[in-house]
Length: 313
Ligand SMILES: [Zn+2]
Image (cartoon, rainbow, N blue to C red; front, side):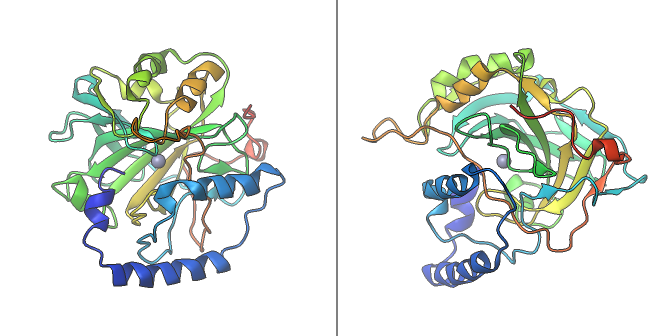
């Protein structure tokens, strides 16, 4: 996330060492994710190889970490959940930034021009950026799963609570600070709403590159049905991993082409100066224990929905 350096900088080395000890303990206790894909073990190793995960991480408690597996059967229908209202103004789109882990499409969040309200939220949240997580192939890449089903990529639209806080950097440290919409990507036909972004990506191939990118409509990346979703209390999936996030995960995936995903995979984790270049792939966090949390759904989870008809490719 954007504020990684700013948030971690004040942490002294001593505190980091203490946290590292606690994290090691948590890792030992953490149940192994049930998965019958042989790829899972290599997924774990690959995600640990990125420099972001090699330093001790500031996990503040670890009681509501993300991502998780969403069990359709165990999720609870909540008739109180309201319809979601997204109002995104394409004119607030500013730039694309390769931050060395993903590419962030950043929005001007100094006014209430691009906002999210409703659903499980009581306040108005402002869109500040969106980004994706994806795999090295089409078999995995998303962070959340639905009944252990792996999609090849996942979009995150990140919003912060502008009713309660004055800056994203402030909201990111607070309980009700962020709302992130997650949208699964499956491979199929070309996504027209995504293509303008795909065309711009070669300009941010290397880490730390930034390119101006304007008039992009983020609502074009939402599925047709935005009223069926799951919601739960979780965390950021990148450092500082703060437990500030109300997650809203769309039930309906969007469809993108293999070629569009191939452009994501042509980006690099590394800067132009580095001798060994590394492809930007497998930029997801491993799944985290639910720890007694309830996942609520805005729709009645009929049994025929237990295995979504859209099988990832
Ligand atoms: Zn994300």
